[in-house]
Image (tube, rainbow, N blue to C red; front, side, top):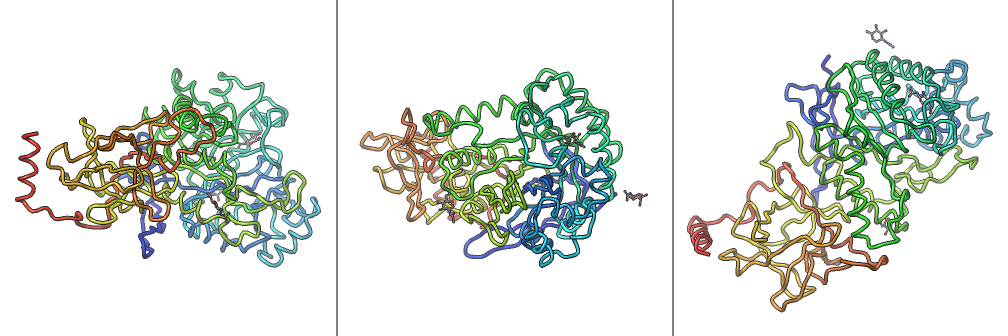
Length: 558
Ligand SMILES: *[C@@H]1O[C@H](CO)[C@@H](O)[C@H](O)[C@H]1NC(C)=O
Ligand SMILES: *[C@@H]1O[C@H](CO)[C@@H](O)[C@H](O)[C@H]1NC(C)=O
Ligand SMILES: *[C@@H]1O[C@H](CO)[C@@H](O)[C@H](O)[C@H]1NC(C)=O
């Protein structure tokens, strides 16, 4: 079954937007750690998803009282997402008397949501008399028409906000998580959507947790769930979560998860800033420690060639939550470095009702309360840096190169002029080489190396006649993201960004130790591997053969 799928990727290439159409064939499968398409070459498809909640009390996809469904789907595409993780409550699949009979109108009325009903009347009138399950299918199908892939996530049994340790939804055997009912629900849902080609994956279960958790039951029931889904819908990716609110897959180190099928298994984790304090200690130390912890709990899977999907991460979009902002920059560094597949929490600008509050405003929503515009375009712009892949099977436009990513802005180091550097789109990134002699040079125009001057000044590209002309650079601090050098005057400086011009400058190295209130984010740089071609066809400078020889000769002498 070869089903072609087209998406548009928007690339911000100042001063114009370019639209590139990428074609790939569904269904998806896996190739080592990558998710790939069904074409001959098995080209990488990077999941850049947004979570769209549909599992709260009303069991209706949120936002449909605010904007027409098709418009919401188009907004998702225009924000650069290629996929939606659509959350559903189990009863939608197992309880006919609930989902097959109750209409959207009845469900909204049950919670006294009269204003939402009139919103539906205005924006999506035909929805009101659809049974809940049909309304859910309608959303999936509209996303398909807009070429948006869907991952179905079995979020809770009882509809409602998730999660806590004692809500009876935590682990197999809890009051509301009967394993048999669960398998039945998964099977039903996988069957219903077996013919929806844009449904590319199914998560088995959201955030297992609580006192009943144990590894033996995990292997037993997750395997049963995975096999059940695969047997009725062999096309889709089966997405498996670990323990402790989807943070822990460390037990897979010793005991692999074995299923009868191949190339369809993906693991998932969640990662939120509010799970720990990012403010109580030196931020370099916290970022280093949290990154190590993620690698230990789940990231090691990627190193072993096993796909890992960060199916929830998110931040307060108001931009004023220091803890979340600190988390996000650290997350961006790892997400770019590993070139992760991910799903941002959340699309929803508001909920019909959450925690008994009608019209609850969702500050983690990328859309505003009325679902009409982007809540914070600065944050959206930053996240757009990790929406398209840096590398992966079938995507190689150039040989792998090292680019320097600035996680706090989502930008990369690009050329400002012949001798100067600035931040710009990662699609225009220069490629760099940090030699064993700590010389940082341009990889394509090897005759240029980076030299640091006094604090506050721009760094300059100098002709690399000998190491004497170049600064020596090394990564410092516990985040290993501060690139430092010593100036002629013996001052220790770090790469930084001039906030007015975006030029790459040097400043005193910030927050190497102690000081919890100190913020080093502007000095964070991460070297990542990319095979994206630069949209500038030629190197900045055509080097004359004579100059090249001269440089090479001087190098071999030094
Ligand atoms: C969905 O989640 C509910 C509880 O949260 C669980 O009882 C049910 O088994 C799950 N179903 C599927 C198909 O994952
Ligand atoms: C899916 O399509 C097949 C073949 O066209 C059909 O036999 C099957 O009934 C369909 N399943 C559903 C759930 O619509
Ligand atoms: C967006 O977030 C940034 C910080 O990330 C913040 O400075 C800005 O005020 C926010 N903008 C809006 C409109 O909330």
